[in-house]
Amino acid sequence: MAAPPTIAILGPGRLGRALARELLDAGYAVTELISRRNSASQTAARKLAKSLHALPATIGNAKFDAGLLWLCVPDREIAGVGRELSARGTGKTWKGWKGKVIFHSSGALASDELNALRRKGAAVASVHPFMTFVQGSSPPLQGVPFALEGDAVAVRLARKIVKSLGGAAFPLRKKDKIAYHAWATFCSPLLLAVLVTAEQAARIAGCSPAQARRKMLPIVMQTLANYAALGPAAASSGPIVRGDADVVRRHLQVLNGSAEVKEAYRALARSALRHLPAQNREKLKKVLLG
Image 1 (tube, rainbow, N blue to C red):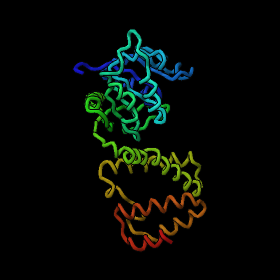
Image 2: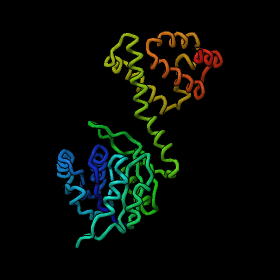
Image 3: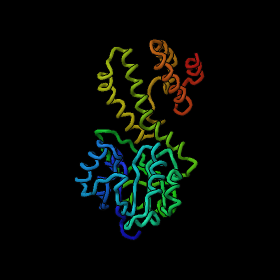
Image 4: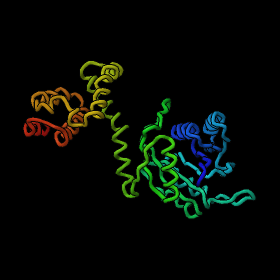
């Protein structure tokens, strides 16, 4: 497509809302916001559509006349939505899916989830932003990596759109999608799991979770800044890098009050021994195995 395509978004949830606003700011026309048939989803779609000068619709009454349809629905629904769309009847104004481009936004699933639409002549791709989207937060897409996989025509268009959003597109092989998604899971939900486990350690030290969060933020933010600026090895500090096996042993003793926290400490400390600088490695290994 020489001219920027018009875009319809199916599933105006957290990701769909963020994409719609960013696409509009980048100069794209978002023509339809297509929601589920339940009233709450339709209400949210109408509100967002009004702010974008787009038409609110459901799968049943959408025109699907945009050049690009971007699915922002849960992973478990992608294939089913694709089959439902592929079975759409041929009305007087319906020209079919041939020549259309369709994206889904799953990090774990390949473009093959849209095979039903591919068989109807659409070019399909998975286009996944390496970013977290939660209620009450709308992160900018400037600088965000997007993993792309799928048909050449669709991937080519995805690259252009990602560039115009200020993101950074990179190719991903179909066979690597699950490993990629596991990596992404370490970067946000499992990072949060480390932080909530730290809150449990703080409880043993006499701090409530709310107090722990306030007190932890400066060191957490500085650690991330050091990681970004210096890399993991130079950002490493504490008893493991110093080889202080006695302190690590005493940590494990005091964490006996929470088997879950102690197990997490052991696992992360072993990872630190394998991948980060450490003195006194053999003694530390014995302590962690003990």
